[in-house]
Image (cartoon, rainbow, N blue to C red; front, side, top):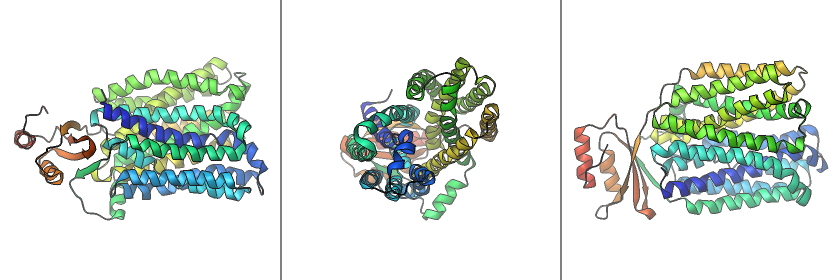
Length: 454
């Protein structure tokens, strides 16, 4: 089970994610109509105002994450959230569509998704990582559903500029959640390398690239589905647009009952690769159901449910696997590349979804998305089971300097990283059990002053 520190940190960092996503998503269902009131608005510029956020996110995730592997992560998160809040304020005060585009671009400049995930990886033990990442993934899904319900209602109350002010308030509120996250100092074997070398190292790793392809395909399919599905729910399921949130939310809840046991199975019994490939297979199956049964209300909902269940399993497993496979000293960098892939996937998913709407052949549309999922599955067969580290929770010694103590720990074979939380007087020692031998156990026992079970 997660300890109190992990639960508090997971809640706070998931809330930061959710508040940012809520501010982003609330605009989407209303701006295509409300945006027409701005000076100079055209359909293309309205689309750019919605999409430019994702573009700047994709471009700046990697620079932010490279810095996060060199410097403290919390100040970078604060900077990103301030940019998010500032962008909302610029858009709120704008009377022209160009001002809104600038505001949305500034808001997207706060590209700290990867930094937040890396911070969550720091403050959770390896054995609890998947659970923490699952909670974060679920918070994103819930914020998506809530935003699509809240956006139209809030716009009717405060107008579109008021909605942008709400995003600013959410950015400031997200900063306050960082108070619940402990201060951490990371210690690992120091690999001196430049930023370009560090990025090249990450990009050369085959399994990391397969995970980047996975998050790209996952969010491409999700975005395309949310553009393509609504008209079919109206036409074939006779469900009006205003009630679509009542379809998505129950399916999200149902998917949690499948997602959490899958995550526990993947982590506890080290079945991550099998669960991962099964989840992609679930996405393929859901899309196949939609090819042949979209004209039936209940088969349409069944295909959507299969997709949601598999999506939420993937959303939880991907960051956990990434944190296991990424080099210790480049964890945030790897997550930055992954986050850029995610936003690019959403960008291309939006483009493909729009094209599918003008196909006038629903089966072919679902077939195209199925083909993308099948290619993704074939690429993912090359994945190998990730390395599993274990975590020891140790009280900081009172008689020694922390830097000296961590250096002695990292000199022991099998000790990969030491994350120190000085305010709590606690350290997480991350251990590779496959590397620990009897001599290393004796050294560790001597250094800690007690025998530890590894």
